[in-house]
Amino acid sequence: MSSIWKEVEDEGIEKGKFEISVKIARNLLAQKILSTEEIAEVTELSLDEVRKIAAGLC
Image (cartoon, rainbow, N blue to C red):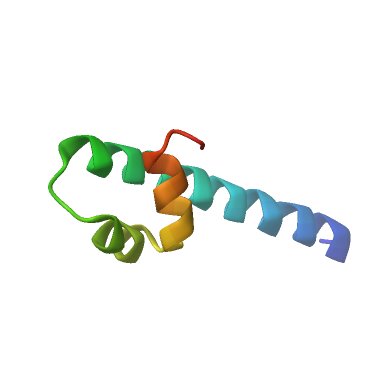
């Protein structure tokens, strides 16, 4: 596989992982069981990203 295709594939995988993490964060925020800090740790999103999700910006 050429390096360009490998880059495109890797970028797609990373985007997919991010989208799944955002979905999980939204679900956890809706349950109001964990703090934003705990959700950031579990999802491997930054605390700022989780706060934006909580504010409805993502």
